[in-house]
Length: 204
Ligand SMILES: C[S@@+](CC[C@H](N)C(=O)[O-])C[C@H]1O[C@@H](n2cnc3c(N)ncnc32)[C@H](O)[C@@H]1O
Image 1 (cartoon, rainbow, N blue to C red):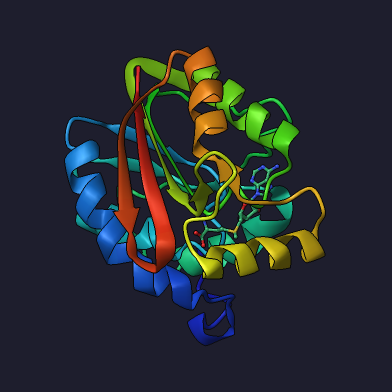
Image 2 (image 1 turned 45 degrees about the vertical axis):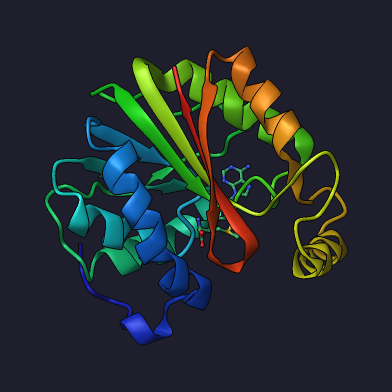
């Protein structure tokens, strides 16, 4: 890949810079026995370059919707890592790509509150289809408990999300857990993270 776009011109998330180290600390434990990770909704790519660089036992497969791929590829061109694959197009509502090696871990950050509820259902259905057994799923983001916000800032964030798209919104952990269970994914850990976020870890 060619470094055609300077890093400074690419989309950048300060939140990713802030949360990548706390997330990595958990992935070091949760993905210790994993081999092939599929990331859903890689966004700017800041997470995948950091995690692939620090988890060199993993083969990391980034993905996102087609419209995000050019910028994602452009960032990855600056970080040539032998365990970081070229990103693939993956829209959770479409057929998921076929992988030559079976995926045994799935990671997704800040996606379930962006996706509509049918897309969140499609996310777990897709995980159910592509993930090996044994396998695991780690999701990061803001979540509610029984419809209750865990902080005033999350309530403001939810209002903001719904202004951008009325189908977006912070999801209840109870709903996420029951969806996951339908695909034989069982919640093992629910960890508090900085800035009122959480990391959920499911295994099958
Ligand atoms: C807020 S960004 C998070 C990006 C990155 N994971 C992060 O933590 O910064 C939400 C991501 O969800 C992805 N997304 C939204 N709808 C999707 C869908 N239907 N299929 C796959 N990804 C989707 C977007 O393309 C975007 O990359």
